[in-house]
Image (cartoon, rainbow, N blue to C red; front, side, top):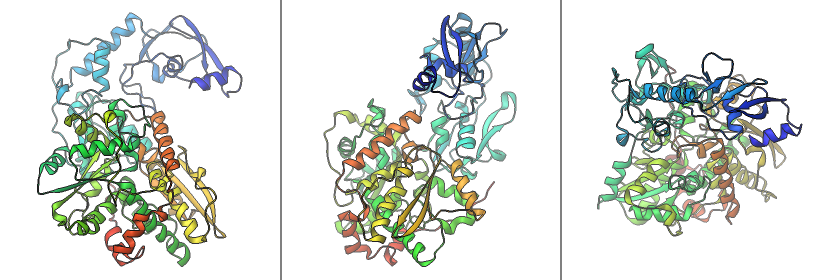
Length: 588
């Protein structure tokens, strides 16, 4: 933001500047920005609760109030634009007292058992109460009590802790275009609820968890698998193996105080070994496997006249969204399971046989940046090994909590390597963690397999970045292949509607449910904002560049898996273990 202001001051910006006075200091800011944005540009942090980056400002919480000369009342800074000559007081006595009073009113109908809350220590309401010196509640009154909604396999909803800021609603509607939740009732009876008062698990919720990232309190959190994983680790009869998603290595350091985007791969492996897992593997292995299966599926459709465009299937939030809202496009979606589920199926068949272990005695745990993975691993279709392929899925946040409970400081860990053979992977698998990464990984292999030529450059920059919909044309052995990438389901709708209308110009499409892809998943550390997403993405691409193997089809462990066990890509055994089908769901 400071760079934008400097450009405008130099005359290179597009908006003219206006002069305002912040706490008596003359400053120039772009015309049309809000008071809140103007203060941020000048290094003044205005407290907020209902405001959230990327969502429409609402002005409902009244915590961001400021004093504007000539106005009879305080104004909400997030929804009030600056104007020439405006004089603003950001922290006068009147402003501070109003903010504190509004906080007390929120707390008067809020549980005061912070130590029992999932967000203790990362709660914005708690932080602001401390900041403004709220030590007692002057407005005791009636409190509403709601039953905690545990119907969803992924998301727990506790309306008792909700402050009605509306951030979760706007995230669900504006970013994801799912509309699973909205305000219900009026006045003191107001609450956030799925349509018709349904439990969340019976709604069109796609389990993406973006509402959790948006929530400032503990009203929304992931359904925890932590205790079940502890029980498995302590059971001497169980052989417990772990798989860690590509995005985890660039985010799990954050709860331990490391800067966003710090690559912690080796330390992470060492930490999870000390947690008690019998083997620590890499989901990246299965990401390479996914590219072989999905790439082969795409080549077959391209060369034999199959249903196009082919759409990727790695994101379980996107898959449930499709089942609710676009079931007519099921045949366009790849039948490949996600890397998490491919890993579970291979672990409980191929790897279990190698070790001579009964799959029933093997527990497969995943650490994912995604809350929807909890839903995915419980789907009935995900039992191709003869039992549940993946038993438990932990978010990045849950994994960090387990390490801390054990007394393990990630920063102090040595560098260790993943176990073999399911820990060998390529740079193509690493970029799965960023939007456009699945497409880029697929193109690296599809191009070389179809053309028989070596790519001059492995970097497909056209499908990278945070633009909502990205597109490119790739010449593969004389055929111009149109590809597209969408991240967040609101952006996905744009592409899906084109397919429905028969106007799609693409052959291959990647869709990820969450903004930024997996690095911005609903199970990632809080906060997760645009700047943090960009740092994680940058780190993901650095991981790729630092690896000697950067193409999935060159992974020696994948070649060995096909030679010893699966046979050929898209073959009978591969279809049995690595592919799936989808189910149309209600739109209500």
